[in-house]
Each structure stands twice: as structure tokens, then as C-alpha cells.
Image 1 (cartoon, one colour):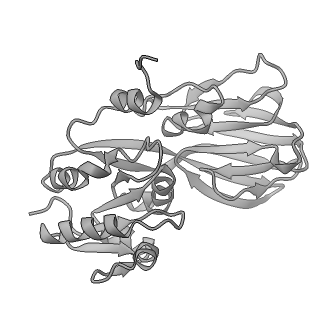
Image 2: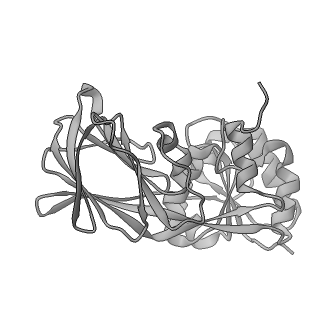
Length: 289
């Protein structure tokens, strides 16, 4: 008997096919007695037949587990869609680094067998809630798993904004932008901007300036109970990004509010998973050159 039934399969969200992998996993799970649900776009793109095709909303209400076959971007997309439903996620890596998709494709069936037999560990990941306020109007309200980023946009000029945390003024920053990252996002854009790596168990967020004009502006780690407000002071082409998604154009005077979301996401890992072993592998620590 499976520990998870039904199981939903979600393929790569960038339009890349992975037909053989999706079909092989679906057949394996069905053979183990699991009801298999296919996310509609995944089924259509890969031409896999014989299983119910469902939208993300249906996955949220019906599935006991969602398996993402892709890269970290696909996991981010699935997390945003499913966080409010508390459906746990597990990732099979078909991307490049795969910080979140920790099951190697060559071990896919073995690892999935362990999971459905109830042998796994659970990891809770913090998400962010972000809003764009223009005067008294809320123009955008969204969630992110990795990060919320205010950036200079296409013009290539420095932008300037004020940062307040829990109502207290922190600083006036001139830079290419600012990243507000969760522990999950600390190994993404934040890391490439010289931010620290936060272990997923930490209850904190990190603010990382992007190419600050004043070099003394350094990353700051704050409690994930903090309320962060970024007020755009100057930067007519400034934009807001969340988890690398399509940008939202900001105007001078706009306020971007960021705080911990009421929703979190649960990652499942097969036996033997280690966060530090994952870092050693992905970041090539301890390698001899």
C-alpha cells in the first residue's frame, strides 16, 4: 500500500519535453497501485495518455504528493501553485544544479519506491508574501519561495530606495537593486550577489544589495517575523521580480512590502539526503583542482 495516493506528476515548466521519463515514472507508480494524475500541460507536451489530466487546482485538492520532473525553476512554479494546499513536493532533477530537485534521474524509480513505502524525511521551507502598494492601492500580491527582487530594469542606471524594517528606517540605498531571500533562495541569485547561505532550518531572511554604490552596504540577516518595506525613491525603469518570473514595472513612490507568507512548502527527501552533502556536490566544495 502506498503512503501517497494519488500522486501527481508535473513536468518541466519551460516547454522542454521529457516524455520517456514522465511515462516511465507514471507506469512504475501505477504498477505499485498508485493513482497517477498528470498536470495538464505536462500531459499535452509529452503526449502521455492513459492517466487523468488535471489543473494545478485539482492537484492541490486531490493529490497526496506532487513529483516535479525538471529543474529548480519547475519546483518554484509548483511551490507557488500548491503552497496553500499543503501538498508535499519531491523533485527529480532534469535541470542543471538542482538545489531543490535532489533525486537523480538514474535513481528515480528506486527513490520513488522508498517514498511510497513511507521511508522519507520532511523539510518545511519558508515562503515570502509580497505586495506592491501605490498610494492606497494594492497593485500586486504574490508569493515566492526563493526571493523577491527590486532591480534597475532595462535602462542600466542605478536606482535608489529606502528600506524600513518593522517600521524603523535602515538605510537609503543606491544600487542595481536589492534581493530579499528565504533560506531556500539563499543559494540562488542571493548567493551570486555575495549573500550568505542560510540553512533551511533557520527562521530568517536575508537582504542582499546588488552592486551597491556604497561598498559598505552589506547583506543583512533578519528575523522572518520582520516586515520589510522598500520605497522606490528614484528609478523610472525599476522592476520587481519574484522567483525570476516576469517583471512588474515600478514607479517612483511605490512601496514593496515583503514578509513571511502564512503558507510554507514541504519537501520530501528519500533516505540518506543531506543538505551539506548537496552543497558539497552542487558547489564543488572540497574538490581538488
